[in-house]
Image (tube, rainbow, N blue to C red; front, side):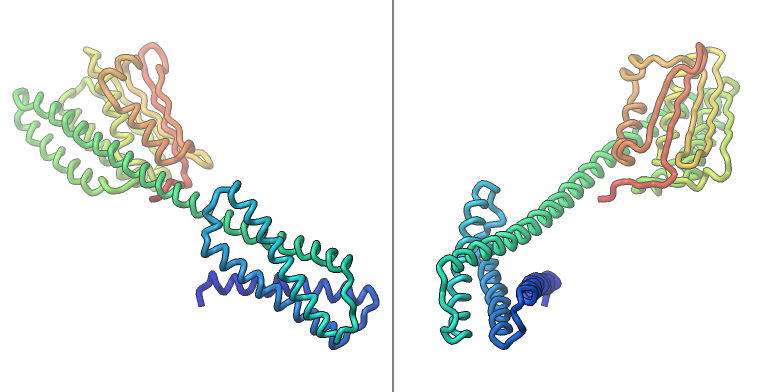
Length: 350
């Protein structure tokens, strides 16, 4: 027997058993003593209730009433409850007459009063049954929509990540190409460095999140390549608390922001500039700040790069509004990026 069928049987027994118990208590309060006819009457009501409601359930299932819209379901719901009440009343009255050996005369007023009671009872049964399935179907649809949303988000995330890899490789190769004629020996070292980066990139490519320490290693390797190119023009400093390194972050996100800081800031300054990467922990978030020399112009950035838009979209898909990103001019000579990531990760899974 399936768990669903077992639950249905248990609910039927508990539901109708509760009704019989209430009826028995009311009879006792009315001064009706416990007797064989009373027991038979209550047992008949219990059996009829379970039997007729089960037949009604089969009709509902076979005719797919639960799939109908509410306007088409209500008339069937009302007529079904009325039909059950009438059938129950006829059967119950007949059994009561037999149990009491005809000593209990049928009273029309009492019959209609009982009919109204059965109508209310079966209406309540129908309400419970329909609402249970409505809620169950609603939850199933909600889960289906969440899975669909998670799958869609996964596709979008993979698309965004696939944009990062060619973009990163292209810029790194440009840096190395500039070194080939200037210093072939250093260019070879840079190529080796790039191969290490690409190897790490392939390993983390399928992961939604990586340890902050892994992302920092990638950033160090990338800055080593850029250091070959810019030499004294690029000054870098890190201020990273050791406790932050185990926190999970999106792969390539910090590297992309560092790359943007160099490409759109320091690279345009004849004397070069400074890049500062800092992290701090508060009770719930890892806050990463990247400060670089230069000035932020949103119009120029939107025309020449995608790093900021990509970062914002990935944060939205991964953290559903729990993470934040901001970029602005810190002063007349510096730009600051602030990335705020939750420490207790709760990302959407497909």
